[in-house]
Structure formats: C-alpha cells, structure tokens
Image (cartoon, rainbow, N blue to C red):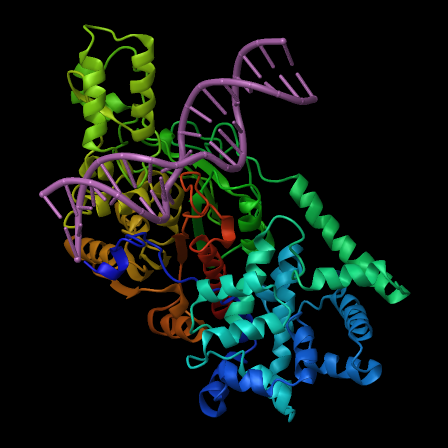
Length: 601
DNA sequence: ACAAAGATGAGGCGCTTA
DNA sequence: TAAGCGCCTCATCTTTGT
C-alpha cells in the first residue's frame, strides 16, 4: 500500500489529487496553439516569477490586468494607442468592442462543437470566452514587446519559479490576496499562471452569484457604471444584463430533486416509455458519456454540472429501487433511456432478503426494511457494545427512550441485528454484495480502506441498468474512457452486462484502487487492454490523440467525480464544486470536450 | 507506523402545525 | 404561509491503541 496515498492526511479517497483546472487546455489544444506554447516555453523561457516580477514594468502590469480579463492583446494595444494608459478609457473601449463581438446571435458557428457549445452557454461562456480569446496568442506571441513576452512566458508551465513570487504576480494582476493564496495552495508550486488563473476563474464561476466576471473586474465595472457612465458603457451594461438575466432565470428554476428518485425508470416500474426525452444537439454522441455524483449537493451545484454537460437534465435515481440500500445519485448522460434491462438475478431489495439471518434477532419496533446510504466509515465496536448494554437492562421491549436511541444509532450507522440485543455494522463483503460487486472484490487491503473505497463507488445494478442500452449497440465490445475509476464500478457493470471490454483507459489516483481494478481485470480473464493513468491531468490533447490513434475511438466516457466537497456528510470542507477535490469535475468536462473534438475530426 | 475510535454540525428537504 | 421539527448525508481530523 502506498502510504502517501492512503496515509492519514488523505486516506485513500479515490480521487484524491492536487487539483488543477486546466480548462485552458481546452482552448489551447483546440486551437492548436498549445503545442506551440509549450515548445516555446521549454526552449526559450527561463521565466520564473523572478524574471517576471523584475521585468514586469508598470506598463506590462497595465497590460496584464486586461489580459487576465480575457481581452486580446492586439485589442489592448489598440485601445492603449487610442486612449493612452487611462484605465477607465481603455477598459471602456475594450468592453465595448467585446460586447459588439460577443453578441450570441452573431457568434460565427465556425470552429468546433466546443466553441459553439460554450458560446451558447450563458454564465459558463463568460468564463470560457475569456480563454477562447486566448487563441489570439498563436499570432501575437511573435510580438517583439519584451514586456508582453515576459508576461506570456509566465503563463507557461514552470517549475523553477518560487511560490511567493507567483502569488505576488497574481496579486499584481488584481486578484485578491486570499484567492491567490488559495489558488497557490490548491494548484501546487509547479502550477503555471494559466492554471492558477483558471482555478480562480473556475472557483469564482462556480459560486452562486455574479459568477460571470472575475471579482477584480466587478468593482471596476461597477465603479465605472456608477460613475461617468457614457453610452458605450451603457451598451455594454445592457449586454451584460441580458446575459445575466438568462442566468437569473436559470437560478430561479434551479434543479430540484424529484420526490421519487426513479429517473427515467426502474426495472419494476418503467416510465421511460411515457417520458420521451430529447437531448440538446451538442449533447448527442459519439461518444456516449455517463457522469455521476451525489444527488444532495449544495444548491446550484447540479445546475452548474448540467450547464457544463450540454444542459442535459440530470437523472436522479435512488438505488433503493435496485437493492437493499439507499443511494441517492444524479446521473448526467446522453444514453438512450428506452429498452433498458436490469442485471440478473435481481438483487435482494430488503434487509431481510439480503441478510436472512438478521430476521431472527430483528425487534418488531425496528421498522427499517432498507438500509441508508453506505458511507465510507462504520460504527465502532464500542458503540455496538453500548447499544447492547442499553438493551440488556430491560426484559423484552425497551422503553421508548431507549428504542429511540438505538434506532437513531442504527439508522446513522447502518447497523443490523446479529444476536440478542446485539447490532453490528456490515462486513466489507456484505457491502460489496449490496453494491453489486463480486465477493472479495476489495479483499487484500485494510478494512478501513475497503469501506472507504466501497463507500465511494457506484451501485452496480443501478449503473448497469442505465448502461444496458449499450449492449445491442456494441455487440463486438466497446472502448471505454473511465475517469475517477475507483475500484472499477463502471467496468464491473459493463462486464456483468456481458459487454466486452476492448480497451479500457482508466484514470485513478489511488494506487490501492488501481491494484484492486487490475486484480479484478486479471481474475476475470479480460481479453482487452487495460491502460492505467493515475492523474486526469495527464490526459491532455496530445495524450488523448495518441490514445485514440492507438486504440480507436472511445465509445463511452464514464466517471463520477469526487463528491468530498458536495456531500452533506462532510462537516469540514463542504465547499461545493470549487472545493479541492470536487473541482476535478471540470477535468471531466475538459476531457470529454477534448475527446469529442478529436473524434469529430 | 498503522488501524481503529471518537469528536466534529450544517444544509436541505419533507412533513406537520399554527 | 411561516415556523418548527425530523431525518438523512460517496466525510475529516485528531486522539488513542496496538
């Protein structure tokens, strides 16, 4: 076992990694400037924050503040030429120009799916458009301005520059100190400025309110609008309001969880025949994709997820309709919802069916028929002992007070009755069974780690039911890109459906989980190829292109990104989508977009 | 050093009641 | 309609024990 990965600081959360948002890469790769930039960086750049901070003249700082707002350098240069170094006037000119260029109706539907998707998206477009503008860099990089070059160079990945200098640079760019330091902390010392600014942008965007402009722009804008407002500003203001309005409507109609979480149907009660869903144009594959996360995320999270995944409405399903334990999850996918079929045999759906031996000891006043959500840790032996002692004081039925205490603990910790006055947590192999994994799937690692890995996994029957439509579409098997694979829930589901796994590209940060997956792969005598990565960041455009060249196109991109910062169980860092781990969602989006783009060529 | 145990609420929704 | 209550949640961090 790798201590670094499963040690005390992070345990073996499947998706534990330093998070870096490389949404920039989408654009970079999309517009083929990525390679150029990187090459340049490797050759000529000795960048370093030191070089930048010393060579960053006041003029370049002046330029930089507009660069980070997402304006093109040539536009900035022109605006400065016309207005001098007057911040207000330059910004005015730039914003007006941008407002004119950006009006959605006029957006030329040229380049890629990605671009049109982004431009059709309201709030997220504000984020992405800023970076889409970066394709200007391809041309203007050849500018002979030293200051501009040094600024550019700092955007490149650089390992040598020191932390504090970069942080200082971010602050110089106008980011609040605290946001800069959070970005530094989250992205790590090796992060490029692009990654850092990306992170800050993403975090800001993911926030509920006013996500469409960087914090540093808002006050300036506000100041200007409240101040000497000219007609240009008003034009811009109206333009922004128009977009903002779309977002507000979106907020008002925030996604609500259905009372009965059966999605587009469950094996016993199909509703898919009644509900015909139509997918947005951009959402239609290839490839098929399937994204999962906890249903009970903080407000607005599912709206953001949906917006980034082509405005597909999430399918909320509680696995209590598939097995004996609850598991409320949201799934965003572009799979057909007709003609699904369940895995056979159907798993037990009640506690008694799943654990017949408990029936003998189950008190009548414990009315549970199903278990609550299986989480990542279990009750201690001491707790079950306390319960036993509390029960032993009474012959027969304990008083209401004790019943309440015992039931509360049983619900909280998913305890089952295993003897007279004796409750116990589920064994790891029992959890495996409930989730649809083969027995001993996670055997060989510590008990604690088994619970953790299993608690972070799919419920196989539920996911397999959704994926079952792939079987007739791919009789010869499929190529799978599996992100945040964990212990291989997706692979097990496909395997149990009888869908041949031709090539599986699996990304999983935790070595313990990768070993489990590899072990399963070998035990089940898979004939296909399993290619493992340990970090989603490794999957850049070049890498994906190589993979597709070597192994063929992906038929399915599947994964559930970290829920750490979304789940209500987290009392420490329930930070939403911009949280340390949960922000890896944006890597799912990035990679899916890249795959779509590469495959469309 | 590792594994287990203990301490640590907020947030969101459904339901009842005034 | 508002307020109050009940219930549930892919967890994290520190301390203790072996």
